[in-house]
Each structure stands twice: as structure tokens, then as C-alpha cells.
Image (cartoon, rainbow, N blue to C red; front, side, top):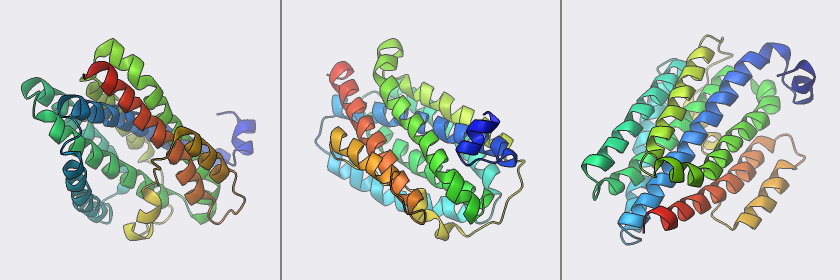
Amino acid sequence: MTGGLGRRLGIYRDERGLWTLLAGALASLELGEAFAGNAADALYLGRVGAHGLGLQLAASSILLIVTLGVWGALADRQERARLLASGAAVAAGVLLALRGALWLWPAGAPHALLIVSKQLAAAMDLGFWVLVADRFDARQARRLLPTLVAAGGAGLVGGSLLTRPLAHAIGVDNLFAAAAAAHGLAALLVWRAAGGASLGARRVGAVVAASVPARSLGSLGAAWREGFAALGHSDPSDGFVLSTKGMYSFAGTLKKRASGLVSMTFCR
């Protein structure tokens, strides 16, 4: 990142190295989440159908309470960068195991894919934003969080746009291997960032609300309008929350459309 661009984005010279590593890690995590989530949704709808989907989502939501509670407890007891790096590496291994499960158990695996992929995504999101809260103070966060959110949104949107052509090239099942590679890259970047000095560890409960971005299920046009309205909000006190909502509203809707296209194309 050049000095002039960094200054215009509000990223100071001594922050650029850490910001670059964290932005790259978030973009990689969101890229992997898009690949895994799209593939899991498409395989479930294509091989199982819509029946039972409500039960699957209910079970996933219940498990999210456990997943986030366990990660939060670990984050309060361990160094958060190393925890996230280790977690991303484990997530990569789990995604490869899910790819193997599709080969060994093609009929039953989609049930597990839908639940496990959502647990991994939630854990990585929480782990990343808790790490950000640990690394930056309030003034830094106000300047840097919007650009980090933009990097994550770019990863999620990019993953959604790449899902269909990549599925054509390597197959839907192998999107889990691509997601594993993205998580592996994120683990390496976070491990590099682990050398940075913490600027004041805070309890996880204080940042959980900001760590799980809002995802709209509205239309693509509505998501676009909501996203840019939120990103253009002028109040700096709530700019991060609104920017998160807008970016992920747009990216989340695009991700749903991508998974639907993959399902219709490959899983009939």
C-alpha cells in the first residue's frame, strides 16, 4: 500500500503492516466461507431437497450458541492471534475432511456439510473481530474498521462471483478444497500478525455484538441500496456497525444467489 493511499484511507504508516495482514486474512476467510457455504447449500438442495431444511437450520442455530460460547471462552484465556491462526488451520483440515466425506458418504454428507460449514464461518468471524478488538484501540478502530470490513466484503463478494465458474472447472465437491486453501492462507497471515503488540485485551462479551455482521435476505437491488446507504452514513459513532450491515447485506445476498445458481446447474 502506497503512503498516499494509506493516508487517504486513514491508515498510518506504523499500522499498515498489521492492517495488510489482517485485511488479507479476513478476505481469505470470507472467500473460503463463500466457497464452503455455497457448496454446502447447493449440495443439500440438489441431493436432499428443501424438505428438512428448517430442521437443519434450527439445529445449526442451536449449535451456534455452543460454538460461539466455546470460542469466546478460549479467546478469554489464550493469545487471540495464535488462537485464530490455529482455528483457521483446523478449519482448513475440517473442510478437507468434509470433502472426503462427500466421497465416502455422498448421500448423507450434505446434512453435515450444511451445519458444519455454518459453525466454522461463525467461529472464524468471531475470532477475527475479537482479535481486531484486541489489536486496535477505540480511535484506531474508528479509522480502520471500515476498510477491514470492505476487505472482508470484497472476499465474500469475490467468492460468490467465482463460485459458479470454479464449480464448472473443478466440480462443486472440490469447492471445499478451495475453501480449505483459503483458510490455510488466512492462518498463515494471522500467524504473521501474531507478532504484533496487543493494544489492550478486552473481554469477548464486549465485542460479540459487533463480531457477527448482519446479513439481509432481501433482494439484490434492496441489498445494494441498503449497503450504499449504510456505507454513506455520516455518524462516526455507529459507522462501523452500519458499514458492516450494509456490506454484508449486499455480499450475503449475492452469496445466496450464487449457491442457488450452483444448485440449479450442477445438482439436479
